[in-house]
Image (spheres, rainbow, N blue to C red):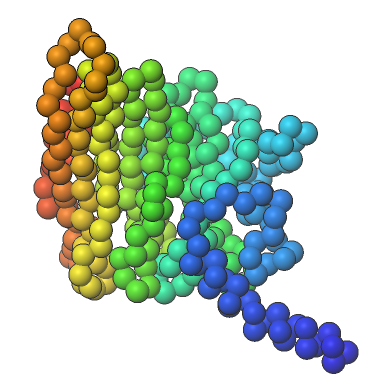
Length: 284
């Protein structure tokens, strides 16, 4: 009896440590059958079933199901994609974050796309694991065919809060399209900060890339300002091409988002990213 009680007390003491260790980790891709840290009787599959209730393990290593639970599109409106009739899920991405001073787990499940949809359907879910696992929020963040957490996945905007970064993309033979969404977690709900669209091109004469970087500025309360920079770089090739190679050039386009207490949301200081998106559209 004493031994059993001792083991139970030790487990209770270790639980916060296990969760703290999970918080320090970056994006992970665990086997859905593996246990959630600090919950040996709960697997990531159990969490995924809160999103796709009839999810089952298939014989081919994929997890299969039908419709996910009802959820809103992170950007609002009805322009988001639709989930496929049959879901074939290989795995899920997980990322531990801080939200309002509390430890939370986010899970990103790319469910694929419906046959009549140009966009995929990707679920970003928020879980409370402090007791019995609880699904707090779920939104569709898919804006293109494939969706991921974009490196670095999260950005600390206060000692108690992380912003999230997701990316949807698709490629053809020489072009790459990406839509990046910056997301705030407030009151255990996902709120969009902005979407940034970028366009990469790799042709015979040159390669043009638009890379994103993220920086939290200062220690404003309740949330720090966020500076997002697109580095638009053109690099000429050494190939013999019909069109002349352009000169090597690189320039930065930056937008800073600051918390507006009156509006209760982040507000950007310019429309530079909208102008970039319009310019990119002319090159499609």
